[in-house]
Image 1 (tube, rainbow over the protein chains, first blue to last red):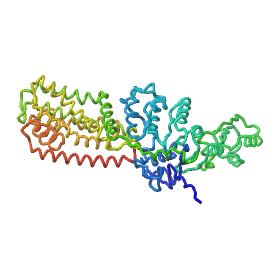
Image 2 (cartoon, chains in turn yellow, purple):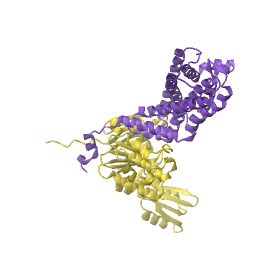
Image 3 (tube, rainbow over the protein chains, first blue to last red):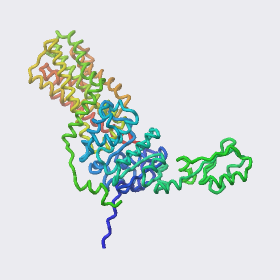
Image 4 (cartoon, each protein chain N blue to C red):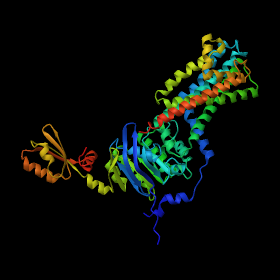
Length: 300
Length: 270
């Protein structure tokens, strides 16, 4: 009897540590990206997302641990011809036109997409003859995307691709990504928007302070991060409130308390019972920062 | 999804080849167009030398230096200035700017062979050298009646083109050591005094003695002397000596560039 071979992960960090001088950017990270999945690295700024991508792309060397791309060295040409990357860059030469940039990058790959196809996928056909310096911010971002996909990559890196875009442009970009990846293409996405990871990813790893603190499907992650923020003017002591079941963290701001709870209703009920004079009650969804608090159990 | 439908498997089965000749040609073409369209670069490289020639060539034209008419001398040295500017700015300011933008990072991630990037910049500087020599040859002929035999002209072009190398190395060292905003200013501060002291703006023999003593410490002086020797100037020092010194400068600049590159490697990506 034969077993199917265990598929090699497309991209892998094994026990990776990365220091910049005395700064620990990654403290022992294990990640496996499987073929055909959209994998999101979610975390706040400075969490180690971009460092992880830099390691996987061979731009950085790990201080300790092992980095593999397609089972080999990320710096090899064999790996590079199968990868496309949209990185956080401020620009490409301003005097070259959109079509020229794409024609040049296409020549680096053995089986690139036709330039016309890349223009179409990134919605750039109408500005193909425009110099990069004359593009709008959104059009520039779309050219960076087109440069990532011109090589027809098996593995696509998107490093915070929608930072600085408005909501409509962000949604449009997600649609372009979905159109391009189709089936079988692997994507590594980094973002600090939970909504973005949710919209695109099959699997999410939450990273904070250089450590992976949670991993799972978007539904699993959302479940664990579905905290509520409660604000109220009350005479109750923070210590007492912190001890209530379901409360993650409490902070006093003047006469008011700001607290984070897993579910709002039982906590609000408890608060009103103990302090009938409570006023200015507000309940809202928790942001990503709050979600991290919930995930780490408020240990920060 | 099952693994056999995954693209990675099928892509590996049919290894397409990329056309390396086309890759290098496109890299060179767009390196040239990128800078040709940048007026600050094409004007300072092509127009300024001709402008200086119009001013100084006509005022000193009847004197001689190192056995050449100053009209011929300055045609050669202003072409050398154009070559130095093209090489130093393409490599120095170019590398600094492209590092700052992140274009360099995108290229390092792509499967572009690093040699394509440097070859393209070198060939671009050689093309600008040919253009600046052509422009000065026409100007010198029309204004001062300077004319060279074809084989002399070709020898001069070859010398000028080879001169791209040491100044490309100099530019590279500064390009990796400097930030994108400071690079152009610092390079101007280095280039102008260096070319002036080396006798490229005013014939070296007309410069004060202490400047003449300073010149041999600068690569531009040796480059200027080689270019002048190519059209039959009475040489100061031997051709072999100038070549040796330039080779030394090139090696030193490349070492400095490598050190700056290593130091920079971990920083531009944080």
